[in-house]
Image (cartoon, rainbow, N blue to C red; front, side):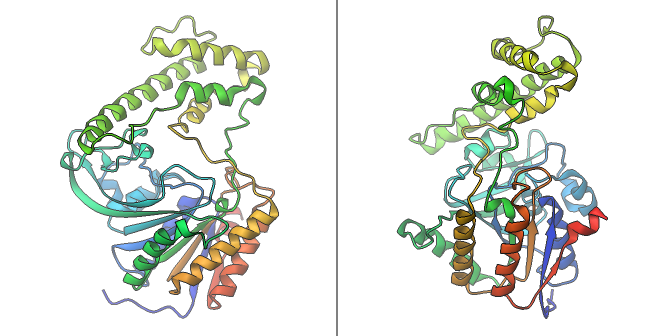
Length: 377
């Protein structure tokens, strides 16, 4: 497919991060981006590299169905399976540890047993979601190269050199790439930290839901075997806990619960009593409490409210990295992430102003569209 050159770099600013995918599709449809195997450079405090639980493989090929199923944490991998992306470069700030820095080559495909989408990456990020499967149990696969770069305020640190060079090499290999920036890269909230705070809920959820990862020292064969076992056990645990918290949302007491998960009841009972002491029953959303617990695996959602100086330092580091890459992106997408509180609402306008100023300085031919304002009207 012969691509059409743009005389400007479009910058699409959305509120929810998954909304940027439609702009990527539009630019592919307009022949400004390749039809497949694109490279995505993704600045974010979160990987956004999960898979919607109710998404079928077939729906990945229908963009309208896909847009209905994706959300902020899972909009990229369906694009990989559909062929849009071949390489994802996740650039995260210093406080993130969901996936260790490095280069990961793995597959996404259909699980031969369940027919659902799964990945062959042995990171806890995937095992704890129950979406890990070894290569031989996947079919109709697509390859993904994931580069994770943890960007410190001091971009010149020696330990960053190799990973930054990997990013530079990747960008040098392609004619086009997509630059994607979530404003929570610069400052981020974990919106669940203060959920029912008077009941001291968060540390109790951490105790109940935290996942123990596969030991690093094991041989790859043992890791593959345990990856499936741990993933299945984790999925069963989350399904069981969802059932327990659903019961709580419909009943006055946990005493009459008779389903699976007896081993979890002491901790759930403690949570039930703690929350009940401080909040009227009508005000408690028990399934929201379960969803908050699901954010724990062997780590937790990042929570770092940056100072003004930290924000400025990170903006400077982003500028240095983009300068090092030399090649400008074909399109730029930006997510505010303030309505869901992942980017602190009291900081989002200041951060957005700094980022857009950086982009205009770095790429004078930008054309900025504040698409989120159109949705608010």
